[in-house]
Length: 245
Ligand SMILES: Nc1ncnc2c1ncn2[C@@H]1O[C@H](COP(=O)(O)OP(=O)(O)OP(=O)(O)O)[C@@H](O)[C@H]1O
Image 1 (cartoon, helix red, strand yellow):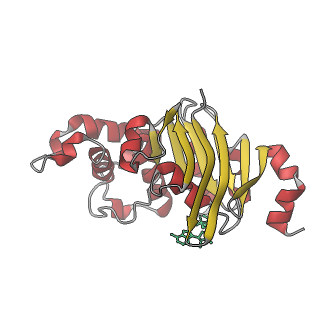
Image 2 (cartoon, rainbow, N blue to C red):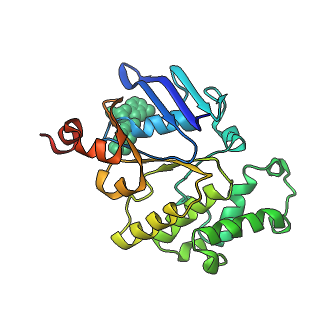
C-alpha cells in the first residue's frame, strides 16, 4: 500500500487555477522532492495535502485511508506531520518546553485548563527524545530565544518527529540557512529512519537534490516531469523551467 496518494487534486482561487489535476503516488520509506519555480503551486499543494486548504475536487489518501475532508488537526493522529515555522512560539521558554507544548497540542489533555505541563513527564520525555534525534539534546533546557536560525529549524523538525509520524512533510527546510546550517539539516534528514516517508517541497533545485531518489517538477499547477533524480535533471523540460532554455 502506498504511503500517500494524491489523485486529480484541483484548487482555484477565484478564477485562478492553482492546482490543476495533480497526481502523486509516494511509496513507504520514499524521499520525494517536489520542486518548481516561484508560483508553481507547491505551497498550495502542500496545504491541500496537510488539510490547511480544502480541495475543489480530487482525493488524498494516507496509508490507504481517504483523508481528503479530514480536518488538518486530526491528521497527526493518522501519522501525518508537517514542519511549522516556530518563530511565533514562546521564545523565552526552553526548547524542550516548546516541543512539549507542540505535543500537548495533539493530546486530549489540551482541553484541560488545569493541566500542569511539568507533570506531563511522558510528553517531556518524548520531546527530549526528539531533540536528541536532531542533535539538540544538549541544549534542550536553553531558552528558544538563545538559539541560532539553524538550530530553530532543527527544533521545528524535532516538533514534527516527536509526533512519531509515518509521513513527514517538509516545507522548504533549507530556506534562509547558511551553507553549514544546510549541511547540518541535510545530514539530520538523511539520518531519519526509513519507517518515516518524507516529502519535501523546495523551490531551489540545487539545495535539495541529494535528498530525494524521486523528484516531481511542478509548473503552473501541474506535474510536468517526474522520475529519478537523474531523469528529472536530464529532462529538457526541467532545463526549460529552471534555465529558460
Ligand atoms: N489564498 C490565495 N488566494 C489567491 N491566490 C493564491 C492564494 N494562495 C496562492 N495563490 C496564488 O497561487 C499561485 C501559486 O502559489 P503557491 O504559493 O502555491 O506557489 P509556490 O510554488 O509555493 O511558490 P513559492 O516558491 O514562491 O512559495 C500564485 O500565483 C499565488 O499568488
